[in-house]
Image (cartoon, rainbow, N blue to C red; front, side):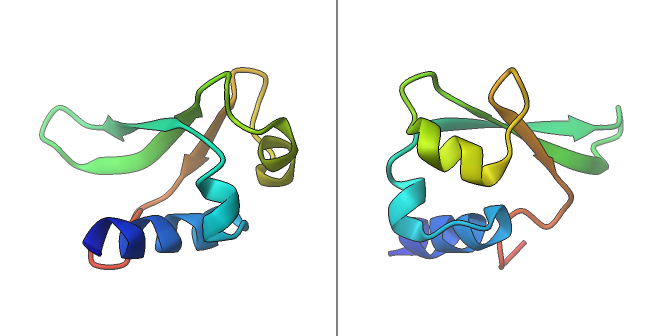
Length: 75
């Protein structure tokens, strides 16, 4: 339940629906300082992700997009 709520918020931040996000596989990496301050999150989508959805998100040539914190609603 928590994962669905978190992913729904992430989908909203990306400008897509939860169902569209479910068509993708992704990995989240932090862009953080040495002392742990998070500047942004880099979301990299797998090559098997829906190209239609990736186009809607507006990923770069490496299938990445950068988002500022908070990444999740309860963060």
